[in-house]
Image 1 (cartoon, one colour):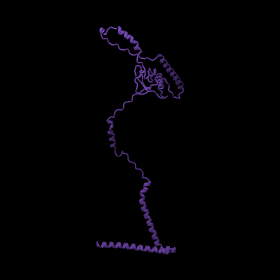
Image 2 (tube, rainbow, N blue to C red):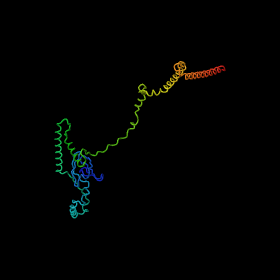
Image 3 (cartoon, helix red, strand yellow):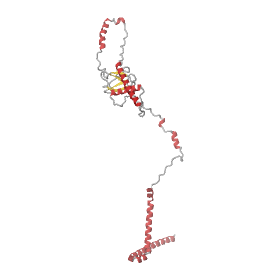
Image 4 (cartoon, one colour):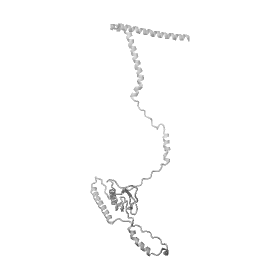
Amino acid sequence: MDRATGEYEGQGEVTGHMRLVCPNCGAQYEVDDRVIPEGGRDVQCSNCGHAWFQRSANWQERAPDHDPDAALAAPENTHDSQTAPDEDDWGDEPETPAPARPRRELDDGVRDILAEEAQREMAARAHEGGTVETQGELGIEDYGDPEEERRRIARERMARMRGIEEGETLEPEVAPPPPPGPQARRDMFPDIDEINSTLDTPDSAKPKPKRTPRPAADKDKGREPRGGFSRGFSIVVLLVAIAFGLYVFAPRIVELFPGLTDTMVAYVDLVNRLFGWIEGLMQGVVDKLEDAAGEG
């Protein structure tokens, strides 16, 4: 787009869209090409509030092949060529540069209409803001800056032109921030002082590991083998005591229970033979020990 006239810069970047560049502040906007009619229309920058006449995207394609100004100037050039003297007589003359194309200014009527509309909206909003300002509990801010209000109205108008939804704002395109530079090589290594302070910590200052209490289930589990042996030994001792008691009190039991006479006699006889076997076994062991001692 021409910065002086605000005309369309180029076509073909995005299909169906055109880019508008404000000639005043340089803000860029991408709008649908259907927003600008074939005859062009007046637009206003939402950043600085500057207004200009914007042509359509394909206005150059519809331009006539023959310029009417050039057709009117053709007879005059023919007449001048007939009456002008020979170039050889006058010598070479410098070519006159073509006059610059005048910039198209915004119509005064359109400018007045836009200014009146902006003033009317500002007055209405100021009245509404003043009415609400009396209610301190609402906390509504007063639009006291006319310049800021005018820019906000221009942004809303551009938003309606682009067809965006209400509540969205039209912001100029901002170049993305440059990527962060590579991290310094010094920052990539650990801090030596921090490592030394960690290594020099005395043993007394180091935190001691906590001893977690052993669950009761684990304690009982560790005591199971010892408890089982004690229980078995107690049972054996109890059985031996009962057997010895039956052997010692056999006559008394027979007197009290005559029906158990045969059983008790057999039991006593079994115990006597067991004692005889144990006695013979012990005597054999003693004889072997005496023989071993005599040979030594």
